[in-house]
Image (cartoon, rainbow, N blue to C red; front, side):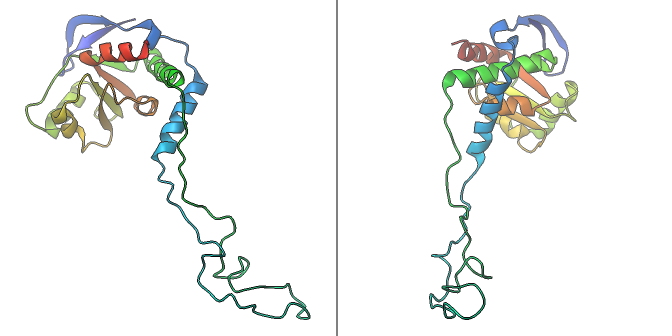
Length: 209
């Protein structure tokens, strides 16, 4: 699959790159994508929720009325879950929501996500560029040149570039990651995927194992 290479002004450089069919043109596995996205979202959960149960609520443990003869249900203490201010029955406890997936499945999920974007023609290959200093205005100019200023976009760098990252940090619709930080969720969450040339070799090498 051939894709033309653009410069950061959005103009055709006259060059083309070949995207590996084993990464960008496979039959997507929807279940693998589902599991990988589910794991990503689960890992974002703090799991610090907590409700006080009967033994943890402050209050007297005195039996509030006699067992029989009242005509109502028996009650042992004011901390009974049936009473206002009582404990919560089977309330949430702190826990981790994370779970494991094997590497091959996660690799398949990322390849499936790339193939979906390629099939939709939502992949742009951009020649490498750098900023001398962090400058949000310069990054916005790149987005405008690529006609992405009003779309959710994901820029994938071959290597960490602090100035490019800092230039994009204030923009809610744009995200910048290195090729080693890619996730299936990030790929699918963007309308357009912008791959810098230097990232292609790393992506294909990592996903072709």
